[in-house]
Amino acid sequence: MAADTAYIEGVGIWSDRLPGWNAARRILRAETAAPDEVCQRPSPDLLPPNERRRAPDTVAISLAVGSEACAHAQRDPSTLPSVFASTYGDLAVTDYMCKTLASTPELVSPTRFHNSVHNAAAGYWAIATGSMRPYTAISADRYSFGNGLLEALVQAKSNAESVVFVAYDIAAQGPLADVVSSAGRFGCALVLGDRPTENAQYVLHWQLREKEQEPHNGSSTNNASLVAGNAMAPALPMFEVIARAPGHVVCALGPKLSLVLDLAPVNEHAHRPAP
Image (tube, rainbow, N blue to C red; front, side):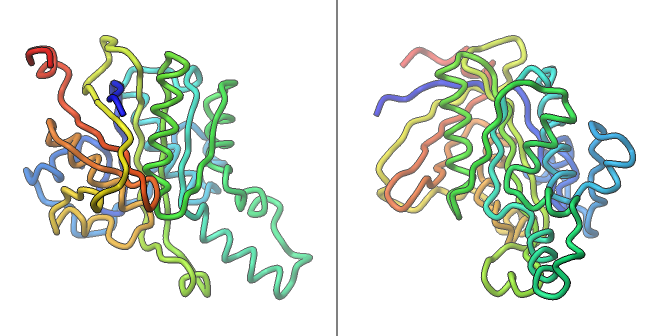
């Protein structure tokens, strides 16, 4: 399949040991060490103070990284369609719902109930930004990051406009931890466009390929430990490549299909001879 081209306009990231993209970029380049202590949960400024305090981790993290990516891209988030990807959604709320329904179902919190749906973070994003643009919420088991990224790339290409892509997962709790595997908290975001605007920072060539080998994971042992055990950990190699660009990464889409990406800074790409 012939390669298509997209442009990365903005980047956002947060994990328990990656406190935002500016710090994460230096950490992923091995220019500085990651903090030893767990980072304070980001505060999503898009939400009013009362909502900010009540927001579950999934909402706080996804809104924070999405806002960071849009700020770096100098984009108004209300103008962009969005794609959200999560392997499991809010596992903490799901654990609460299961325990409460099993013991005292009449005491289920309406607020926690509406936070239990898989598109809760996407809904909060639309409300907080005042966006009337379409959003998509995706889950594809351990292939969630790759499929979410592909969806965002296809939307940017087919609609000829920029898209914000947000991916996140948190730790499993209670009996669910015996069924699903996820530890810690991790979220990341990209603003992706189909053309080289003045905000474009990286050029991205992408194509689908039948899976002939395991996805390339460029993460060093130290970097991989920053999101170790999180269900969205397959996203980290992409952001390491962005931090160290140029580079190559492969994201699994399923047992037999992969998304192959080659990335370079826009300025460097502009000076390369045409293929």
